[in-house]
Length: 328
Image (cartoon, rainbow, N blue to C red; front, side):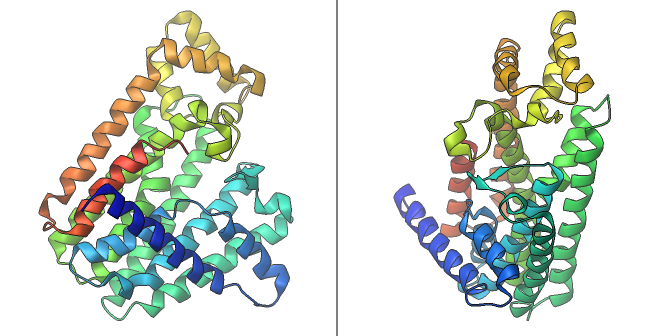
């Protein structure tokens, strides 16, 4: 199949998922609860996670239409994490629009997150005719790991020393575990065997790692209009990303002092972002990040060796390239 065919499938499924998501909130009362949910869902992201559920089910020989509810569940779960992350990070914009707690208020945002996770479980149960205990356990473990990852991320804000290994453990939980869970759910619900489930889980985990490091890089070199949030926000907030930690490893004395200012001051001014961007270029940090992204991407593709050749497998491979070359 051609890339054009894959792109058309992706766009078609995005519309299907969008419609199913919006129907959950249409004409629902109380408006004060469901309108913020609809607002959040309408500020559409890539819908990567539900797509991974249906592709993983298809990759093990199932009809992907039988896992739409599970696909909806993981997207609701993902948006639940975004609402609460934005509160914890004091973020004003998400996908180019005001975050829920900014547009409405803090209490509304917290309640929006709560109802989203409840609706996620309700949606998942519709598809849980097979391996229900295993599927619910995997979904719940995904929530636990995301919370653990978010907690580690917050811990890093006050820790003076964080290693790249520490960072990778954090993003494996906060980001990669959710991507892995999507692939595992699709394979489990699709009736995959143990080898297939493990292969697709491994694919998702590596894809998630590559995705997060790419996200870290786009935060400082991306186009703000395309990226949907303020460029350099990680540095402004004092976050210890792969790029920052790699710079700390490579920097010499003068540059190390500049980097330590980020830790001392718990972030930088927005006017200083360009100075740090130039430092990262000087230290070849973006090149190092690209090598890491490529390594995890190749690991993801290699993990699919045990999946029989099929259109879904080829699309999963195509998706790796799309995500690591994205601009937003």
